Length: 175
Image (cartoon, rainbow, N blue to C red; front, side):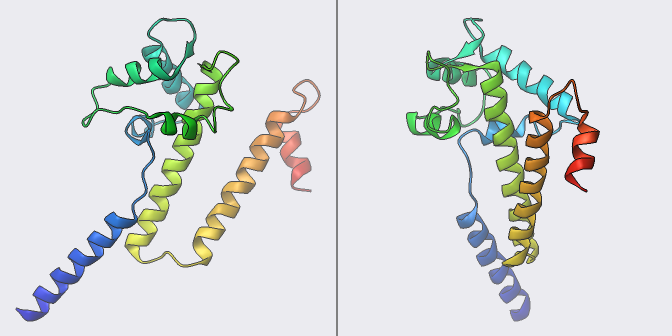
């Protein structure tokens, strides 16, 4: 019927528009392997396991070539390989690298946690766009919530551990 054909054509156009607006990051395939985490400790363990698998020379740090060699081990299809520009992007202009130009385990965990955050944010926004619920206020509201959570996490991380617990820091933050 004509109505059904129009509906199918409109659905195809919408699907193509969604594909055109889909944003990806260089480490998305690797990041997807982490999204089943159940707690922050579980995420840390998963990231540590990735690091250990990628640390080919077992020196406790990853350089650009070692990351690419390590990514080959995962058998992604198509193969995952970072360009120098990708490396600069995920290491925030190489600010996360140590003096030898390598990522330590702590640096790698920071990179991967940022990748998980970015991936999750993009997927939530893509889902909202597909559902037709992406207006100007909703993304701003979500970003505001995420920023508040980041601020709380940063405040808790910066608090002296001997004098105040995270609960005390949060209670003070919400007074």
